[in-house]
Length: 123
Image (cartoon, rainbow, N blue to C red; front, side, top):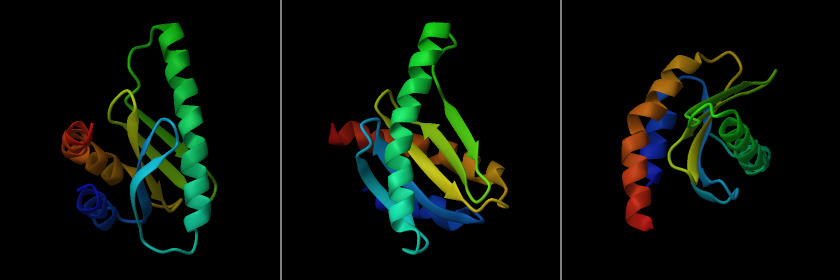
């Protein structure tokens, strides 16, 4: 159910390396990647990212900043776009460092409703 949605995000994002749907517990529900060369590194990073997202949400609650919607992280060799779907689930798009992140952000927002609908069916 989720694979075609993630694959469309991956295919339409210039410079995309992978896209992952996961829970805030770090368990990956589904993924799509362009290659398996960095598969272990990507997987490790998204699992660890889940803990960071939890901490950001807790800080936002303490500061009464409102709900977290999106996080963008730019590393030297990689960029990550994180789009929050629900209180428990989010989607992460891996991009090459020179990729333009605007299109990826748009695609994540565009497909968020379909991903949420699928999550609600699975629950």
